[in-house]
Image (tube, rainbow, N blue to C red):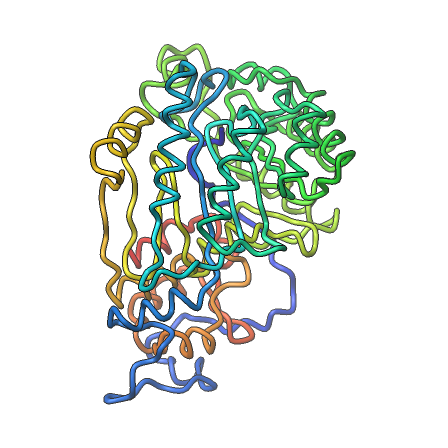
Length: 440
């Protein structure tokens, strides 16, 4: 449903941060981090980042978890999409949903037979809004039987404009869905056609209004930057129409063109013009300026929200919190490891039938890997990494351990420190992947 990949573009920083230059970070760690306690040999292990399995089990039981459920079905294939999603016959859909319920039911707590506390559930795809309400009800009932789902849990479903009816929206609300993510992508009819999208510009507004009528106020709109032929005029039009709708949340993604897609073939034949990178950055800067002026908070590289409406589920990914993924291609993280399922719906159904699980691979989470991933993902948030809190949670003084790697980034103007937070600069947000490469 979404564009592949997440853009890391420029943002205007508010003045008055009082940032400390990191030009000589490695040699100035003591000065910059004067308020930070240092890590000394022989210090006891910090429970926040336990290396031993038993300690990580305790940590997992104390946490609030997120659940992601992947629904790979779509009414059509977008020209830019390289996901294993599309139109499947009804028997395959039924078999896939049965396999999902089997996987959810077989999920076990990390250490004991006790229900994990869940405070976010996210149905992604694909186009989950294609599901009949009774199928969604069946999945949610299975989740609630197996897990302790909080009364105030954030429950999100992704949807395409044009696939939502009043009856379906009311059913979602009754089932507890309180957040909907709409794949608007653009408010230009020409650009929608180029992307192979089959909804109209008008259907975006109609879907938002319909959701509000039934009581779903928390609505995200996805936008895509870097569409061939996109220009400042069409982007201005998209911003005008988007902010007129006042969604509570907006995600802005960079279009990535993958081999084998119709869009890639059109570009290769010269039928479309590659998007201009400088122009795309300028459009993103315009969006940032407009979003701030409209009262939105920029809280992550590609995400903006009205105050109090940040995506609680996605924050788990950037905050080293655990989550379980069900369905093909779904990923899970439980402090011990990252694991992922087989990629295709057919392989998923077959795996669940033959071996009762669909895991395709695992990466053990060593202490070092967990710390470095926490740094990398934490830097995605615009507030950055709280250095004191990081030290308390992981037992690591970031400036002491990683000063040598961070110093060149400071000299290049990609990172800065202000108010005890390590964060990306405006330039760093443009070149975020260069910063993240230090921890990969």
